[in-house]
Image 1 (spheres, helix red, strand yellow):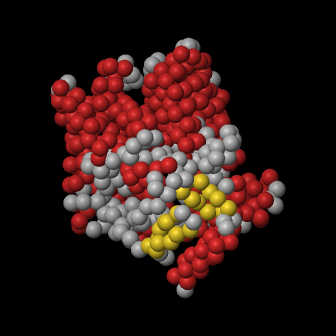
Image 2 (tube, one colour):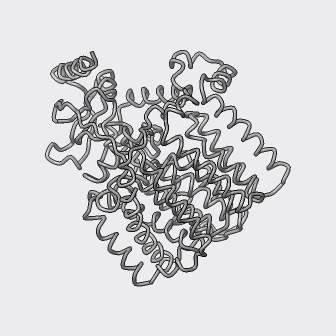
Image 3 (spheres, helix red, strand yellow):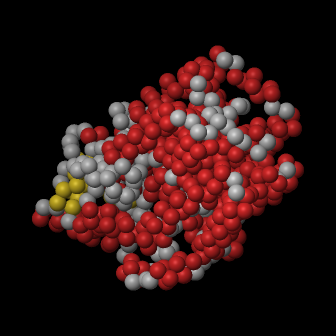
Length: 545
């Protein structure tokens, strides 16, 4: 916790300094206050590093100039004086919430994607930058979220513990205080569960609510709002409702020209290009928009991934063949009434969406109508491709904020926030109680107990057990008796993909054996390589016996 505090003391001034420079020299101001400058710093740095990652690794050599530039503007412009404008009352609230956030951040990471996706992605970006066709090595790596690019850039010096989300959540609390948007304070306790990992869910939830608040308050700086909306989409494409709302707000509410959306369109093009570089298609993981790129993943691997996504929709409670036989009514009923907590989430989602639609119809407000249309489009797309609750959880927060924002005072918000924060910390500190209360909440079984060392440094898992293999020109590592490669040396392949590649009759290979940055392609297995892969699969299976 103490080291996280020091990390924040370094990162926040850097972001504030660069955010101020972006606002001053580029005219990109979307709101008043310190928090707005920090968010502009996050967006600007992440986009610069996204471009840089095509050419160089995001290591200390790219981190140090950014830190130096941020601190230069922070000191030169005397931005520390802006803290004097925060009242003692608000300062005490900010300090209290900062301590709560940092304490929550110090617990062990427990989101499974942390081990199978977040950490490996950050490692690749830190060591090699954006690698062409890396999805051929491990499909999930083809996503390379802009948020993980941002995290990777700070992972050498400023944030080696990968807790950048705590910096964002502190910024969010500061924004709430500066803008007196007290309803949002009630949501902070729920976000504490995202601070132990560089989860892209937190930035898209937090920043979408900030943009929504600006729109509801009549902010007419549509150029910056639309650009930030597309940036959120680039972090996680399931947030497609936000750029749709930004477009509708720009054209039908503010009635600004299309030129206002120019930079947002640039970010969108950069997002598409980044995905085609790493994945082979414009939007991960959808195989739409085939430009004939030679390093796109094998069609059989994509088909198996699509089947897995369908099964995840039903919480792996039905086989793919069984799901395919469902009628439309059966598909809906089985999804609504799954065994466990996800059934309650799905039913709540449907009820929440119906309430929001009815509320919008009753209010007959153009802006509310735009928000509702954007949310409905997003829900249709998500339900069509993979109706997992984590892809539409933002709808709950959006509807709560729109409906409750006018009625929650500072005092009531503070009481709710503190009460729920205590409950959230209790769940993190005593995960066995959470598991007993909600047995079907699977991530609860991966939560670690509180340890005194957390007061000094955040808890981190170490495994570092792996085996090394070679197929063709590719030497790689596979975690031993564990499905993920969060601390396995690169290049690493998840054991499940070994079996998928064997089933598809292909295997990843280096384009250039002397330079891993030149990327990966997939090739059909030769008879000798088939024998090698069979031996690897036998070794993996034997390790579990």
